[in-house]
Length: 128
Length: 466
Picture (cartoon, each protein chain N blue to C red):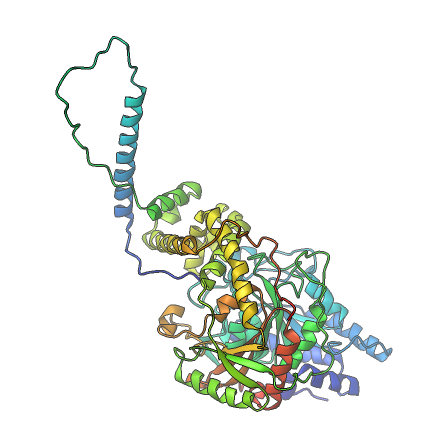
């Protein structure tokens, strides 16, 4: 029922490694930023009069792809050891990628603000 | 009188005439079909439950009423089968799913009650794809009753998700059956099994007591030998039901076969026979020649709208809500098809925004299709791009490179009716079908055009040699 583009393969080890690395990096950056924001700024502190230095640019960690994050959400929300089999993970991952592609297509359909959802769904026939 | 094979494949009117002439009783007719269901049903994995005791009770009632001069109409005393997603008091209702195979819902669906009121005799609950295919099955082994096997060749699929109704009517195990369609589940098995099937307008038939896969997409409809049979059944089951708020007070009137209006205007959907099997195309062209004798035929291009994305999103999201319990309980891991065990998980993650956007696009699809019918009575196309798929291949593998028109997704998203009639044989002597799709509430017109086509052809009289 759903159409998919050719999916890239995912295996359990790669998936777990990608997710762990990406999540850890994202979390570390988030914590670091959070810590900086929280650091108390006292009035005694005077800015050092040093020539302006550009802070070293740290490479931003790549966030995990949305399909991987959704896959992990599924594993958390519906925990079951059978979910962790290679073919099952791959199958769900393919479905998720298909759903995300479909989501992008739906979002690209031109809709005006006044286009209401047809929640009161009924078959339509305008009297000719 | 001994009932013979010819009775197994007879129309409702013909069976009714024999009954009223006294050639046989409803009980004899019922025993005849019960025997076929028990003897031949397993050959096609067509049956979930044979309802012998109930059938005999209903048949005896039909006989005693006829003897007393009470005739409930054309379905009086006629046996039928119901897809096993319709609730029946005291009889298991499995939805095709292993975890529910012994579950009994202690109520009758409105359709079952209406058919009882019309005098019909329920002889079997018929097999179906588990959860009506909503979990995303990709091959035919997707029911605890086994793959639906085609009566023309048991190496082929009967189609789904109304697999049992398709093969049971196709094999002459019951004169007619009730199927359901969310997206293709009546038209596909009817097309593959060489029978006539009708998808009614959304709201024409109450769905109370039927399994909900998608509240805004599900339709119940007849599958039978002829368009006239489908008209008789639809007349009995249609109309408003207080128990289903979406059902509409539009009961179909179909007492006699109706002639279509003079020269109805049909439109061939552009490109609908381009990517189909060679014999499907040839049969379609021959059908157009037949139709041209009593119709004007033009051509129309379907507006380029995201029919499949809308229909797919609505079904996935509504299924996810309807069956989250099946997933969270772990029961889903008991499904027969491996892909059905995890097929619902991804749908749980679709955001509400997608569902709402699909619902926002849907009225545009409805309006665009409705406009297409200005001056056109029906769109025509091959029902399916290929003959029935082999059971040892995945669907996508067999149909690779083949596709018919997009009217299946479009018609179901819009809630408009369609009918399929057999129109010949294709590869490996398997049936092919002709599809007519009309505007909302045009069932009478579709049925009359299809009936006229069947008056001029005899494909609907062909049946497998069992």
